[in-house]
Length: 222
Image (cartoon, rainbow, N blue to C red; front, side, top):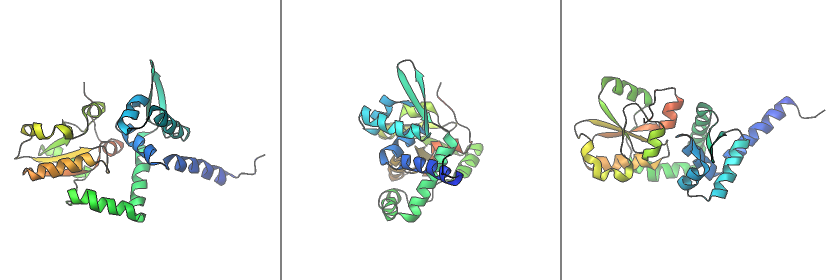
């Protein structure tokens, strides 16, 4: 009979989850999978990793039961194993990092807050403004991520296309921009660019995965 008690068994299992989170590439892969399911090939291209390296990181995440797979034809698709729990785990990690790690605070100050020092719009505020029809919701993620899921009624203008598609945005209407999550630079860059052109624009406090994990309504492209 094993001498490991129930508490130690639980801690051993939790340590495996913590180890799976202990690499920057795996955290980035989880962020991409929080937008929707992806093949190894797609994740490799998104994260600028080799196919072999991407596959290795995904297997570690799978052993920790943070992701799960489904085979479709020749492709194996990966997705989060429980959107709500994994997204909440990532949020908790971010909060601890912001409180305890000086480098996180430095980057947040030097990059993120330098581009948007204003208070972001909360999910609750955005729900209220959407119900009143007072806001344009701008999704600045790539088109394929938007197709997998987005906020209701959102307008998709990827950041790279923003300059040439400004005519689609009303200068008289408030804009709330969002992207992949709290550390995604796309919405910060979009907010800075639009404010320079005189638009009334704010950033959502986090991103699409957090909105979905909160149980708020989402849409998918036809």
